[in-house]
Amino acid sequence: MAIEFTKQAEELIKAAREARIPDNVKAMAEEGVSHTKKAYDQLHSATRDHAAHTDTVLATVHAGGKTIADKLLSHSATNAEATFNAALQIVRAPSLPEAARLQAEFVQAQIATASSQTQELFQLSSKLATATMEHFQAAAGKMFSNVGKTN
Image (cartoon, rainbow, N blue to C red):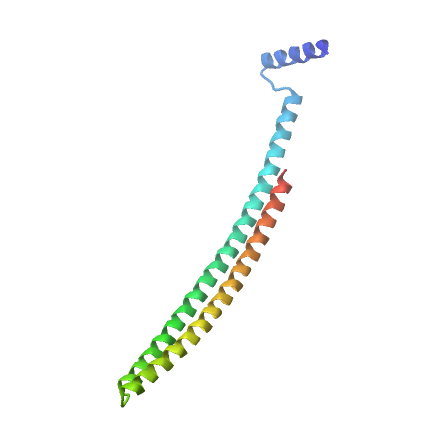
């Protein structure tokens, strides 16, 4: 082994004197560059795929947020309209007992409406959270799968 090491050292010194790179060093360097390029290409591909999945997750979150906001605005408009209608009926009531009856009916109706609206928003939120998590899990699974391929 010492003889081979000495021979390699002499070749390296001779190559340095002749200002040439030994063929085995060139081959090793080329192989290193090739492996590094392959790893980079795989990582770049995985990053590009991850970005696409991230866009999908963010689009789902954005769409879900918009859907919930639209639903909240719709409920607000419905509730405001019901409140104004009840207020007009109450102020037009011919007597105080009639006004109190109308007020009680309005409160009961609004409690039922609020319960229904809350349930609707909960179901919508749950559905959107499930869809978002499905996209997120798919993206994470794909990303970890791609990362495993780079090793």
